[in-house]
Length: 328
Ligand code: BDR
Ligand code: CA
Image (cartoon, rainbow, N blue to C red; front, side, top):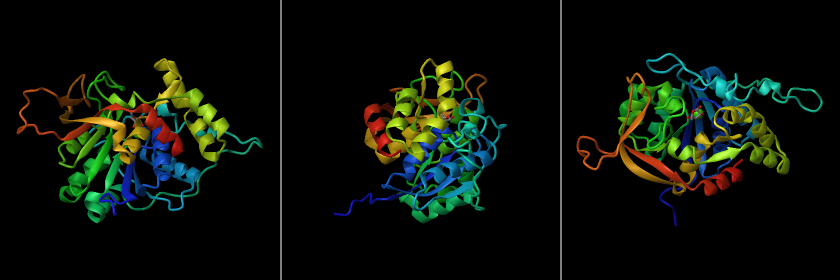
């Protein structure tokens, strides 16, 4: 019998090229349920040019049979100045890979010779929306500037997309970059709000679930020892600075798997439980800029405020980690 959801499904990953983005891209490249058509890149954790290099680095490490197109998009948020996370992901956004040498003293991660496509990420998103329509899932791992710009460029075409799975925001827990806001929404709240109003089916993989799926430093190091490979070495290397940040600031030596979880949910939605909510993103607040606000009142007016987001509120972290290990 032919499944209505025939595999492999076309997907696009939209990313700001950080450490957890890298792990998420490795999973997607190794997942045979996906046909990863393109990786569209934007500024967020790091500037867009470095973010694209980081994505190309990951593809070079994984060496997939059919490498996806890598296209650069927005260089800054819609209205705000850029705000990066180099202090968390390392100066190159990917754990400062230039530090690592092979046993013979040569660079473990020499400069790449490949370049991103000359196509713009916004064109790539619109073309894919036109070509694959409802079959297309976009997994958004960074600020939502590329997707909002594509909506501003051609709303009707973008509305053909089947679903956007967004790593961003929070419903029941505090923010991470500020008391109110999660990083991706904080960087470009205007873009996030445009996507909330898009009418495209949205799944929100926010901090509610991302922070329930930690990965310890010890687990990464043991994995690299037990399964020595270019990929496991890369994971151990690129997560070093990122995990040290959590050790020094959040009291556990490891990291959260924000972006990998969004890819996990794209692969297997049964990993999470969701609640349909009406969500807006604060674009002006002095203390709350970038805050995702879900209206969970019983007496909410369904007509004025219909649900626009399936927000993930719980996750089977063990099953997710199993999936992660299968795909790295
Ligand atoms: C998000 O912020 C970024 O730094 C991570 O890559 C992730 O997408 C978590 O708040
Ligand atoms: Ca990210």
